Length: 406
Image (cartoon, rainbow, N blue to C red):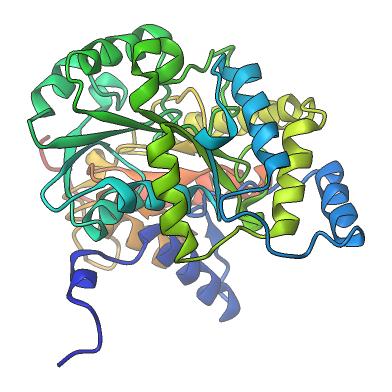
């Protein structure tokens, strides 16, 4: 009898973490590797946020807190939702977790029964379907191709909903594509959801503040107020505030669900770090002006990466509205042969070729549910990005033969 639970056979380790670890191992072995796999800003946590943590430590805020967040942090989150999204919540509608991932996990574990279906637009963040599987639910991926800018249409959503649908997971701006939904695009989806009162909406807004070219972010409960009572609006400080290691995510939603999520968390991690909560409080209540300065840098990087990738033979890259990812198509290299005589059969082969031949680490599209693509994170230095794109161009130019017909 195996000591490992059967349920773990349903899931796989995170591919993005695997790529990042592989890049670190190669660097440690002396290889010149540029890692473009991690979704982590290269900027440091702003000093005023660090100061909030220092003060908390000096003031002895190093004890247990309420399981799902301090009252002070919950109040700051309430103010954030009102300020940024025009949404009103009370403390018993707010939960704070150890990162955005735990918040999503808690929600699924607290709500999904065996056989419940969860609609997930693909490409998707790698953890969505596996968390649904751990909760004994059934992920229902819906392919959203580059012809529609990787966005779900109302018709696709309507076709995917069944009597077994429990949740619709929505992510804008998207990991892995960077694509973001306009008000009108989101309104088309919420119009469908209004007609299906048994479907709950889990919106992952982690990249809310990372949008470019005057794009205006909106969230489902903001666009369609009648969905307020069945929407869990998830967010966190990891990406916008460069606080990935602090591990603070939060969500707002129906009281019964929030209470159930706290019950799950009480039997796993209990409260998030007290010091990290103090830092998150500082982040949400502090001067937000640094966000624009950093977004200007991200936008420059995005534009440069998109331009350079589109100059590579066989690569086609759309310009996304937000986040810090691009999701180029590598269809134009599938079927070609590497200098070593290996045929590129899929996007997994292509990213392996990039890593082995050029020392560029990125993530295959298969991991996100839509091939043949690959994800590049441009949350690293401009110098690294320029060099990485040059290496990708070199790798593509070295391929021989013709690509397979699409």
